[in-house]
Length: 413
Image (cartoon, rainbow, N blue to C red; front, side, top):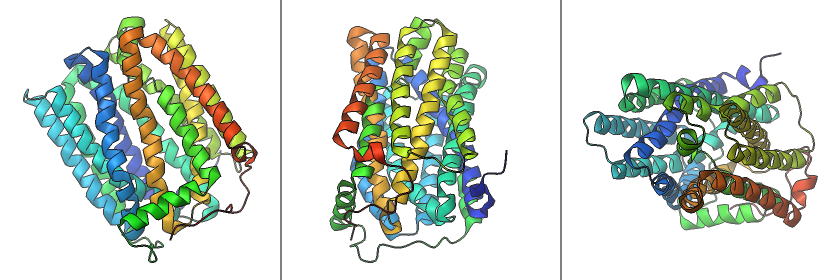
């Protein structure tokens, strides 16, 4: 075991630590929201509605957020977005504490938080390559994923305990406080040099169009986004977790929290292992194989009635997702020039968030008519079939090794 090289860079370490704390609060709120909505309305479509609230703002505002990240100081953008996110979490807590909360308020605040994410995500992802040398970038993405998943282990588990001990609103207040960690990290980082997109038209339709054109001109980048979208659209079981927990596995809120944390446990284990790996070879096939394993484990989760088997299956999905996330992020960042990274990330954000959020709607609709287990099993099958079709359509992904120079294709601006 050795200290991951990315954490030896002070600026990246500050951001990494701040994100670890913040993600814990965010994950607590996410899983608490699923439980809260199911308490207010047991109709599966009500859970699907949260997907609409989370994805529409991302589709509408992400491209603008990407152009903003390429034309303004990414650190300053994050100062604003993190502050607004904290205020929204406080608002959610106050409405819950004083008995004014309704499912429509939850949808509204969730949508506003999604607007914040649409602007925060491109700046945050594009900032990372500016904090450390290129040679340590793969390890940085491994450690970033570790931070997110470690927070995702603690968040769901703590959410069940806190809800049962202190009430629903306590989770939302903790999330608000957790954003302060990122704000402190951004202050300690100081100024960060970046390649401003001087040739672009700034925050304009031309800049957005140039970013989209760049993505479509890079088959290796676009194909990874397509696999990401298809896999998460079909095999997103998180929305139906409350139904599976209560009606299939016959467990309560605390066990629901543990089950919700299983994915992150698997992801953290894999991320820690990969942080010790100096180099990942045959990255294209490793990425594709991980997505297929993700689909298989989802099928197992949908078929079992054992809490132990269900937990293990979800843990495997988390581990597989960990491998695919680290590899695909490395591919995209290394194949994208700095001046267009924000716009590339914004397009990816639509795929990355659009898949699971639209998948929540799809899962809710299928569960409404055929039951939650059927929705989960067919989703896993769809994930596997979709991945195979994409590998057939874009063979570049199968042969990508990881040591290639920046591949040919159009450049933005």
